[in-house]
Length: 236
Image (cartoon, rainbow, N blue to C red; front, top):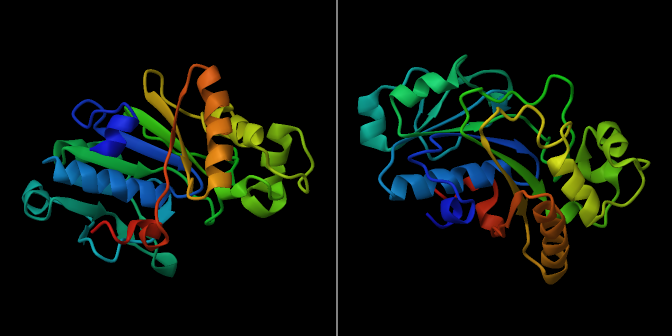
């Protein structure tokens, strides 16, 4: 439960968690799922957008409590175009079956940062926590190369798309009401996760970014997953 503790979240209270942003959402999602399972919870993993199904997990369009009890974690949705998974219309209904529901609420085209479009993210109103994720490999590289929807990201930080991303830019994109905090339900816990803090330079950038986020009265956590953990495939 290390990640849950570091995020100051309790799976018994924060039963529906939605992840948004870029930079390792899927890896983080499955790490949270693994730790919840190890703590005795059943877990339903799904999306309000489109994700690739986990190769090591069972998938069901209409899971049952018996299936979850038997397999402990199940990916919920329908496989459609390009093999991607579309989730159910009402992810919160899965709370009747699973102890914990983890939802991926937007896409980032495998880029470390993003600014949401007008119709993004899609966060279930029943979410008790929202995690905004960024990859620290964006820092020091151009906005146009590292941000999904770069024009929107550039506008939020008031820089041209060819400007280099700073730790302050990453903090702003994560915490802006039109960035990582967009659409967070009233009363839901909000956390920022700075992923890929796996080199001294990235960790330094992450600490600088986290300090700015904490100065706003918000919580920020640094993580560093190994390459073989990418996309969460090693967790199950």
